[in-house]
Amino acid sequence: MAKDLLPAYEQVKAFIKTHISAGTWKPGDPVPSEAVLAAQFGISRMTVNRALRELTAEGLVTRIQGSGTRVAELHRISSRLTIRDIHEEVAERGHLHTTRVLMVQAEKASAALAESLGLRTGARIFHTLLVHLENGVPIQYEDRYVNPAAAPDFLDTDFTRTTPTHHLLQHAPLTEASYSIEACLPTAEEAKQLGIKRSEACLAMMRRTVSGANVASVARLVYPGTRYSFAGQFQA
Picture (spheres, rainbow, N blue to C red):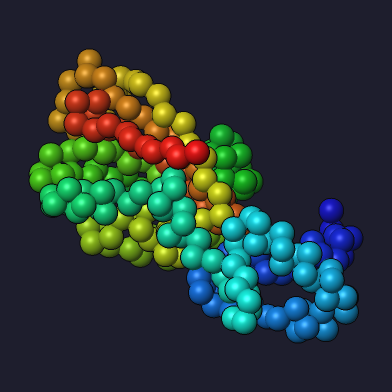
């Protein structure tokens, strides 16, 4: 549906989401007031209010009486709930995290990757292969593809100093994430880089993150089963 055919409140939502996903409005930044948005779009404040209420329910903005509407601290919310930076995980255990960078390059998207990233086949994408170590012991093999529209400076990052997850949380605030975890045997390359046998059971996480209008990245994260476990907490 063309933008000018969207309902008025959806146009306001799209306008705000675009500024958030582009990074022009950072977490904590103020969003224009209802009066300003109503004047800008030539609509009623009631319609603007609906847009802001829906964005609040989606977790994209926060509204506090007397302080107006602000961009939500999306990356921190998502980090706590679903996305953990492995550097932070290791540091919390009082251990040293290091990274072995195997590959950082631009590629053309295959049909399958293009579909996962919401791009056309052959579009330019970023690809990284890393091994994360805890006190010198490999604990994660990371194979990640990134949408340049979400993180245009991704390839310029020194991944020995910051992780891809940290870079994406900083530059492409999360609005959605999905993942699946399964038991598997490592490929020959994964076993080699993790320093394990091909017969050693691993846990593989497939993770897809979205930032505003863009799919930000898809990643395959492989963990040796004897060195890593997943834990969570639920409270009714």
